[in-house]
Length: 400
Image: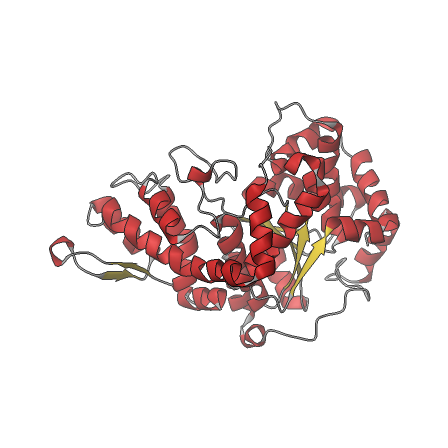
């Protein structure tokens, strides 16, 4: 079985009708909607995946999720299916923060290292339904291109990754997509769909438009439309992924999509459950200059002796350790001198004892983040097309 260092090292480096779906299930115990002649496996392959044992692959993929539904299904999938398809998606709605940029790159690289293919759904139509950028599809698509540029620059391994625009894919296969959306909508009561509104950054108390009511039915359909074996999204998307599994029960489909929900990083200020694109003080953005990162981290909430709910320590755990496999602290000798932490547990223990102070953590965190972000800054400075995209995105007003 792979140890933590192996995991960290590897990490850094259609839709059918109900009857058709049921027919697929009876043909093979492991077969899923991913197996289709229209989905050829890319010629390029990841040599690391062939070198990993089943348990190493399982541990690598499982390490992404704060929750996995279900682990036995995940292990069975990795054992019996070549090139499982992982679905990830994003709503182009503004500048990219490090959770969406760095953490997604870490997770995608783990999945591809384990032999998976990743389909990243650029949900431009969904952003329009959710009234992002005032519903202006052209602006939304500019943001989508900007986000792809960032993932390329930060080091996402794209050999086994496809970026798919929802507007293009749905239009090209509308005869497959819309019957499924309608079937999902028909089988669910309105209160069940409204409970999924968290996926849009809304609450059940918000006044939702008709378009926003339709949104969860479409996102649920996406999972089957993309023939996904694994739904790799944040915990805030969990409810609609569970809806997809419930839909499988309704249509008596045995092979359900596996839900791998990753942890949501909090905002930098006290009490912020997650980063906000509309509040620059809550987020480190992927193209922030070094000085901006330093100021934001310096002002971040980081109470001494307290690990729980400490955003600085969360960034170290979920960004710095997976990226570098260590966290380096530089201090005067009288304050403990240089120390390289190789485990989160050791760092947290020292912090709770007071052997590690916020004044030690913050400069070290800023330095690590700036090392990760420097290639992104360089790309947007040196590439004229990327530079123009960033200029446009920064000029847009983020709408909720």
